Image: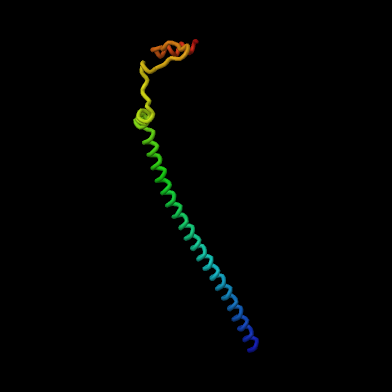
Length: 119
């Protein structure tokens, strides 16, 4: 019986060791997975920070271009360029030329609309 009891204890000890090794293996795999996930999350966060900085730069560039568009499309700027660079002038009676069978000018807007609609 003593021999049998020793064998049972030895078997239990081996089984306990196997269980401990399995548990330790599972814990180690869990730790490696956790560390891997943490490092992957850090990489993703770093890439996200880079993209946010690029977005801020692009948004600043867009804002600058929009303000340039507003400046360039102001009537005073357009008028200045037209008159100074291209020599354009506002029309007056002296610089209007009528071509061909031009209809006489109608000074009344309602009469002009009526004549266009019914002729």
